[in-house]
Each structure stands twice: as C-alpha cells, then as structure tokens.
Amino acid sequence: DTGVSQNPRHKITKRGQNVTFRCDPISEHNRLYWYRQTLGQGPEFLTYFQNEAQLEKSRLLSDRFSAERPKGSFSTLEIQRTEQGDSAMYLCASSLATGGNQPQHFGDGTRLSIL
Amino acid sequence: AQTVTQSQPEMSVQEAETVTLSCTYDTSESNYYLFWYKQPPSRQMILVIRQEAYKQQNATENRFSVNFQKAAKSFSLKISDSQLGDTAMYFCAFMKHEGGSEKLVFGKGTKLTVNP
Image (cartoon, rainbow over all chains, first blue to last red):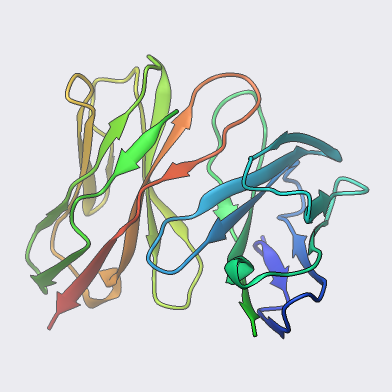
C-alpha cells in the first residue's frame, strides 16, 4: 500500500493562469474524491468518481473547474483562469467500494497559491 | 443539508492526561456514519475512529473512544493517556448512509496541543 499520491505538493501561479493537479489513488481503490481546504476550515467536498464516471459535483465546482479520471486510475483537477479565492489546499482521497462503508484515505494535498 | 459543528477551536492537554473534543451535527437522516480524522502539521489526514449511527455501542480504538448520543446529535472524541504525537488538528465528519455518494461533511476542526 503506497498510499494516495498527489502532485505537485505546492503550486504558485499568477492570477488568470491555468493549473492542473494530479492524484494517484491506492491501486485497488475505485472511488476517488477531491476536496478543498482553506485556512482554518475543514475540507469541503468538490467531486467524486467511481471508476471513470464522475458521479457527483458540488456547487463549489464552478465552470472554471474540471476533473477527469480517464481510465479509472489517476485523476486530474484543472482550474482555468485562476482567481485569488482559489488559493487553498486541494486534497484527494480514495476508497474501496465494496457495498458497505469504507474509510477514505487522503493524500498529502496540493497547496495552491495565487499571486 | 448536513452540518457539523466543532465548538472548540483550540485545546491543550498535558501528556498522559485525558481530553475530550466535542462535535455536534445536524441531519434529518436516520442512518449515517460519523468519523474523527486527525491532521498532524504538514501531514496527511488519517482516520482515527468511525461510528455507524445504527450501532448503540460506542466505538473504541486503543486510546481513542467516542461518546455517541444520537438523540442529542452529539459525537465527542475522548483521547486517553495523551501523547505528544497526538498534537494535530482533529476534524469531525459526517457521511450519509445511502447508495452512491459517501462524501464527507467536515467540521472546522479543533487544534489539539499535547504539552510535555
């Protein structure tokens, strides 16, 4: 079990630029989640995949945000035309769907700073 | 919509003592899960303990135990024999028990410091 891997760990970019983050889940996990965590807050749900299907999106996920999981393995989260308010830690988690509840395992996150 | 409230932004405890972190939640669901996650400084979030709402018995994991009061919608975490490594942010989280989603709804967290 190598854990959930997220890259990059840190991203600094200018307002208006596009950024893309990658998440590699635990290999046998077919559910993958994205959360956003701002300073002093708990993580907020953004979206979730089961295999390659995106099954749920939060209203927090504006049209500037897009997430994909093309082959049901790794996932990418892209933010277009970044804004100051996008500065946050972006967390990825994965879990094994077996019909019952399974705990979500989190990665270290990608910290995004918008200049 | 579900909400989770952690009313203690910060707490401290002496090493080897016991501390209790509070959490309340609001939901109209009858079946759900509750969790405590730990996030050490600059490290990833890890699951501490989990409780199924249909189980009356409080969950226990070594030094960690919960006091689950379903009618009061309260879910507190007790840490016994606190250790320096318990220093972290602790988040209470809620998950509906229905097919599909399993998204977590988190509280704002409690920063716990264990002092030597």
